[in-house]
Length: 284
Image 1: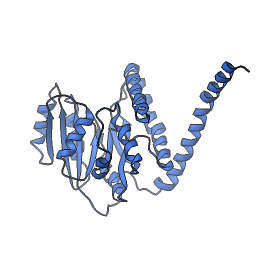
Image 2: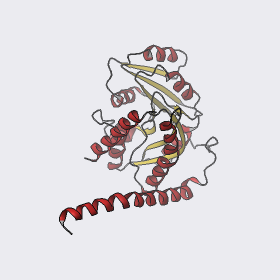
Image 3: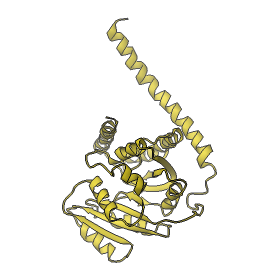
Image 4: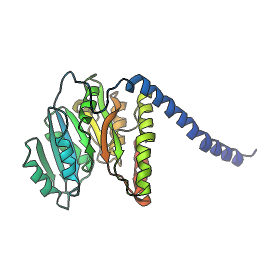
């Protein structure tokens, strides 16, 4: 066998066996996670009481979210948690987002608004919000996400379990189902991605928190130098930097969050390409 044939054979073996090996790894990790962590949990809408309820600042970066920001804030106002504030960051929106969030804030003392003069990206918006946030824990969500009322309760149980828990990622569920591409992603997020996150938690390293819903400890975030404005995917970047500094990153399947996803092949391709480029950037 010549040199070129050996490389072709090696490439073929990798292409064929790698998915089989990883599928086996994810399934074993997911099964262990269920029996070790998840099996004894109560229903997601009936969480056990927490030993204490420290305050949480909910950070919501908004860029041209006029169509959905009201729905997002209404879901946050219904959180079944006794002490929290909502910080809405208008990241230089060019639509009516600024006026809408100011109007919302005027009706609820728990809501505050921060307006940036120009669009600088999600990382800058989040870093700005942490500077004005009152509490030591941050729940970060996207401006078009709808959270479950009990999600914060489930995530804070991890934060209260030990001082080295730096971040807890929630469980996103797709709510855009008008096309076949959208419906396929419903199954992907509820089964494949959930299984992979469970397995990663079992093996001790979560590849990435979900940027659409993640709870972060202020001390851990400060130790990791906050979100990186130069990162293509700030969620992957912060996940790796937290774990490189020995902070524990966990997954909570009961912390549900309903999200919008691309419903065209072009939109899906651009999104996944950005995710892959961000992961490669984080690796380097």
